[in-house]
Image (cartoon, rainbow, N blue to C red; front, side):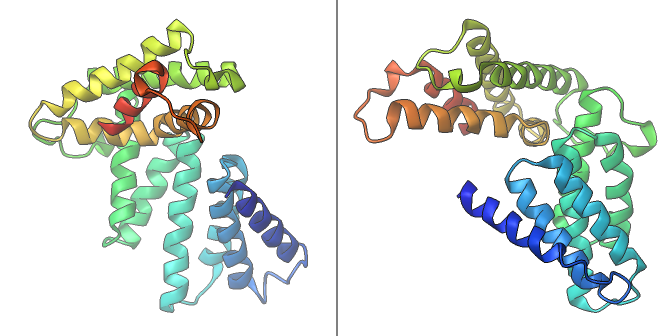
Length: 248
């Protein structure tokens, strides 16, 4: 599938290389840029995705067309830009942009969800301006819990990056295994709390790249130790721990 996304990126890049006059074909160029942004998101190329989405948004802002397809493209482009900023952990940039988009598209469930996720990420880093804070929900995750999960996920991501191909080993280093168990523990405990505690932590898990890292490990473990094999899963503690964290 990654190969297919890479081919799609090449196709959009070739189309953009035609250098269409942006003053005459601004909306068409914006569509190509926005679509390439989506492809780059799928490939984990967040810098390129953010650059494409920002360029597309600029062209669409200059357009005076408000037909439904163009409005939909504006909304999709904003979401893609926000996702790229999340991937780069530029939550301070994503917050005001999403607040503006919520005013423009008040019925967009995805923009509302992403805004809440960015607010949670900033709250976890204890950098959320008071005026930007979402109304506190009953049973929501505390700032301490959010901060704990955020720091644990940062540790997981740093270790996964440092290990490289080593994440396919049946038994990962003790430090990473402990971090994975910490994530599993905090999510499992949150599941026992009434209210929005678990959903807050799950949202932060996605927003801070935790899901991406866990899926990286899962994919590497599958290819190295499970695919085409008969294996007792209890013999793969890493896989079992990751699956438990994702399952919650």
